[in-house]
Image (cartoon, rainbow, N blue to C red; front, side, top):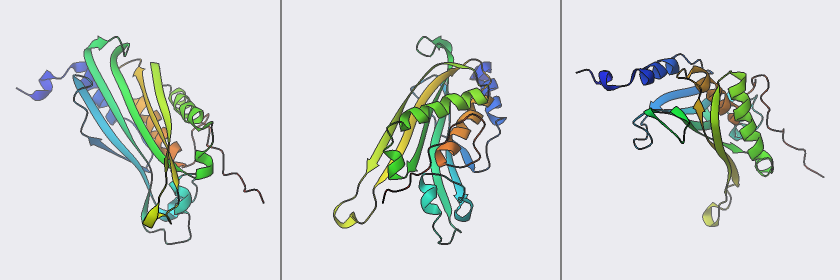
Amino acid sequence: MNPLDQVPADFLFALGTLRNARCRSELRLDEIPAPGRLAPYAVALGAEVVVPGDAATGAVHGPAAAALAPASGSDDVELATGRFILLHDPDGSAVWDGEFRIVTYIRAQLEPDMGNDEMLGSVAWTWLVEALENHQAEYRSAGGTATRVLSESFGTLADRPGTIDIELRASWTPAGRDITAHLEAWSDMVCTFAGLPPLPDGVSALPRRRPRQP
């Protein structure tokens, strides 16, 4: 028996719509092992924004800022990473309010002064909401958490500068089984976290780096 015969038709349809998504060229998207305990059926995609060092000159924040150094730009620069997981339960879930659930994660490094902005979490969540609206990806029951991760080095590593990463974990229930717009919206979000312009209409950018006070 063909293993696909055991997969619900709705989930197979949703998988097909994922293949139709048109993502930016800077985004490397690959299938990764899906979690096995969250739903009877699941698919997971891993993403990273990688550009040649000399192509990152338009970035406004994050590790791209370091990549703008005059040194040779021949090496690729990783600007952001993320995961996109589509879950399906044919019996539906009261918690999801539906038969499908999208679970996502995005992480990118920021410059310290931007990472200390108290509004950063709100901005990150606004990016998500606006990206979904821009792509007309209908959804409900959305929730998420934005986290700033501070890394400091000591001892023999004390010369390393401190870093601040922004992480956004979010999930929502798509209104239907066509997931194309949802993946496209999320992929734009990963690029936004990476600081890569141009941004889609209506999506706010992080504030540019403030000038240092004399």
